[in-house]
Image 1 (cartoon, rainbow, N blue to C red):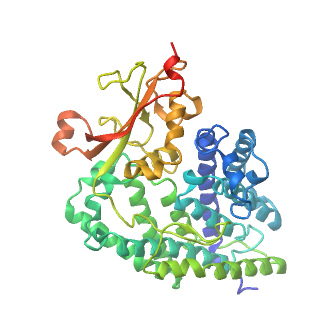
Image 2: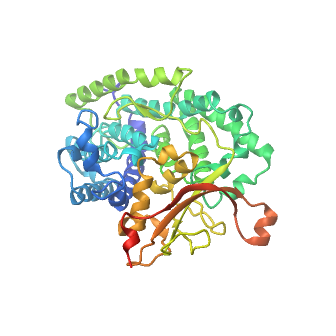
Image 3: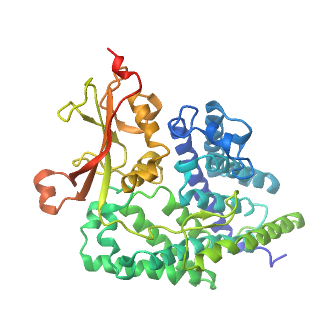
Length: 473
């Protein structure tokens, strides 16, 4: 069945599979280290409360059948272990059917997490990892050459990621059409990286060139993925270069990395393939059936993509098999940050000893330079950015966060860079204030050493205490 496979892509498959396993590893590690404070039994959005009101058919998950913090931890660390095994190439040592089952395990585990993850897992790269991971199940191992139809479907995902993002920009904020969005984006993006200040300070004409190049990469180049080689490899390589540029300019979790992984599947590496057996009939039938299903499910994402009312990052089925993507349809012109402070004073006053909580990734102290965290995902830090845009984004979890800080909850404090209160001595009151942040100029940076300048805007949350806290000695 020479028509079914493409031996020339055996190395592309190998690179793709190892890179995807690495992304899975980061995703499961993020879940294992953060879930207790976010989703645990005493978390801000507890999973038991969610599964009690959402039926299995709407959010299929292992945790619909059973939940405990220990069980979730076991699933997350099992995902880490399986991802590490796949990264090491264990699937290449197994029979084809067993390798497929091994790739199915991380997909099932991560689907279970995403479907109960609520706000904390509402990002487009969650669905992108699941959609890509599902196709990886059918890509085969050393017992068969890569199926052409699966390679095509991986390019189909990459096309929708890039082209969908390009369309949402043209239809969204006018600054994309005027080529001026990068005058603001590096300063107002969710989580700046260590080089974001310098990207922001690039000359404005260069920003215009960057935006124009982005339009070309997202609106024209994706069509070249379906052309013969070496054009398809050149198109994928250009996308990889663009994504690496984005990696340098900010912290976007594993969005850029999973896009790079997809692009790697379209690159034909100059290496002679080893002898590979023909595809067994059962494998051909399974792959073609899955391909037909995914093409059928592509109808709604495509209809959304070409619609004038296009929406970003939406799944149209509970298994996240075919999704719609997009990013930064609008760009903020001003950066706001919610600064959380606590005091041990019994009566909170403006001149009380208010101490600021420091987050790991989001801007806080103006003198603290941003660090690189991606592809690791600081979920609370990202949602704090949304909370600054509008309190509506924080309505379901911000009150619980304040309550945990008033309790000096250990799991919640682990999500932070620093708590100003020692263990056993929680604050009596917590307040939140909204500040406007802007990057300093070159002169201000030299004079103060601060990369940010911030200005108080308004109260975000008035001083708040735990019920009954007034009676504490």
